[in-house]
Amino acid sequence: MAGGMHRGSSRPSLGERAADSGVVPPPAPDVPRPGPREAGAGRHCWVHAPPGAEGTVPGLLVEWRQHSGGWQGRVAYAVPGPHGAVLVEAWLPAGSLQQR
Image (cartoon, rainbow, N blue to C red; front, side, top):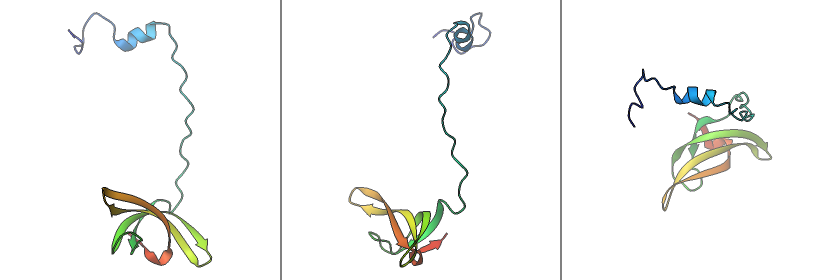
Protein backbone atom coordinates (compact mmCIF):
# COMPACT_ATOMS: atom_id res chain seq x y z
CA MET A 1 0.00 0.00 0.00
CA ALA A 2 1.81 3.07 -1.21
CA GLY A 3 2.26 5.85 1.32
CA GLY A 4 -0.03 4.27 3.92
CA MET A 5 2.25 4.87 6.87
CA HIS A 6 3.77 8.22 5.93
CA ARG A 7 2.52 11.50 7.31
CA GLY A 8 2.22 14.53 5.13
CA SER A 9 0.12 13.02 2.39
CA SER A 10 -2.59 15.22 0.98
CA ARG A 11 -5.30 12.64 1.69
CA PRO A 12 -7.31 12.71 4.95
CA SER A 13 -6.75 9.95 7.49
CA LEU A 14 -9.18 7.07 7.90
CA GLY A 15 -10.48 8.65 11.12
CA GLU A 16 -11.09 11.97 9.38
CA ARG A 17 -12.87 10.27 6.49
CA ALA A 18 -15.08 8.31 8.91
CA ALA A 19 -15.99 11.49 10.79
CA ASP A 20 -16.80 13.28 7.52
CA SER A 21 -18.98 10.42 6.23
CA GLY A 22 -22.04 11.48 8.22
CA VAL A 23 -22.58 7.94 9.51
CA VAL A 24 -23.24 7.98 13.25
CA PRO A 25 -21.68 5.06 15.13
CA PRO A 26 -24.01 3.09 17.40
CA PRO A 27 -23.86 4.03 21.09
CA ALA A 28 -21.49 2.03 23.24
CA PRO A 29 -23.27 -0.66 25.27
CA ASP A 30 -23.65 -0.10 29.00
CA VAL A 31 -21.13 -2.44 30.55
CA PRO A 32 -21.43 -2.78 34.31
CA ARG A 33 -18.22 -1.89 36.08
CA PRO A 34 -16.93 -4.35 38.65
CA GLY A 35 -17.71 -3.38 42.21
CA PRO A 36 -15.09 -2.77 44.84
CA ARG A 37 -13.16 -5.84 45.82
CA GLU A 38 -14.11 -7.39 49.13
CA ALA A 39 -11.41 -7.62 51.73
CA GLY A 40 -10.04 -11.15 51.74
CA ALA A 41 -11.52 -12.13 48.37
CA GLY A 42 -9.16 -13.90 46.01
CA ARG A 43 -6.23 -14.40 48.38
CA HIS A 44 -3.38 -16.76 47.66
CA CYS A 45 -3.03 -19.62 50.11
CA TRP A 46 -1.30 -22.95 50.66
CA VAL A 47 -3.57 -26.00 50.49
CA HIS A 48 -2.25 -28.84 52.66
CA ALA A 49 -3.01 -32.42 51.54
CA PRO A 50 -5.79 -31.52 49.07
CA PRO A 51 -7.86 -34.28 47.47
CA GLY A 52 -6.17 -35.37 44.24
CA ALA A 53 -2.67 -34.14 45.12
CA GLU A 54 0.11 -34.99 47.52
CA GLY A 55 1.80 -32.57 49.90
CA THR A 56 1.07 -28.87 49.75
CA VAL A 57 -0.02 -26.95 46.65
CA PRO A 58 -0.62 -23.24 45.98
CA GLY A 59 -4.25 -22.22 45.76
CA LEU A 60 -6.61 -19.28 45.57
CA LEU A 61 -9.01 -18.73 48.46
CA VAL A 62 -12.26 -17.39 47.04
CA GLU A 63 -14.56 -17.21 50.08
CA TRP A 64 -15.28 -18.45 53.60
CA ARG A 65 -18.35 -20.07 55.11
CA GLN A 66 -19.25 -21.39 58.53
CA HIS A 67 -20.36 -25.00 58.37
CA SER A 68 -21.61 -27.29 61.14
CA GLY A 69 -18.08 -28.69 61.56
CA GLY A 70 -16.39 -25.25 61.65
CA TRP A 71 -15.07 -22.84 59.04
CA GLN A 72 -14.45 -23.88 55.45
CA GLY A 73 -12.71 -22.08 52.60
CA ARG A 74 -13.68 -22.31 48.96
CA VAL A 75 -10.41 -22.72 47.11
CA ALA A 76 -9.20 -23.31 43.57
CA TYR A 77 -5.98 -25.24 42.96
CA ALA A 78 -4.37 -27.30 40.23
CA VAL A 79 -3.52 -31.00 40.38
CA PRO A 80 -1.71 -33.14 37.82
CA GLY A 81 -4.01 -34.98 35.43
CA PRO A 82 -3.44 -37.52 32.67
CA HIS A 83 -3.31 -34.76 30.02
CA GLY A 84 -1.87 -31.88 32.05
CA ALA A 85 -2.98 -29.77 34.99
CA VAL A 86 -6.60 -29.97 36.15
CA LEU A 87 -8.25 -27.09 38.00
CA VAL A 88 -10.13 -28.13 41.15
CA GLU A 89 -12.56 -25.98 43.10
CA ALA A 90 -13.61 -27.30 46.52
CA TRP A 91 -14.75 -26.38 50.02
CA LEU A 92 -12.00 -27.46 52.41
CA PRO A 93 -11.69 -27.20 56.20
CA ALA A 94 -9.89 -24.10 57.44
CA GLY A 95 -7.20 -26.30 59.00
CA SER A 96 -6.11 -27.37 55.50
CA LEU A 97 -5.44 -23.77 54.42
CA GLN A 98 -2.55 -21.48 55.27
CA GLN A 99 -2.04 -17.85 54.26
CA ARG A 100 0.78 -17.29 51.75
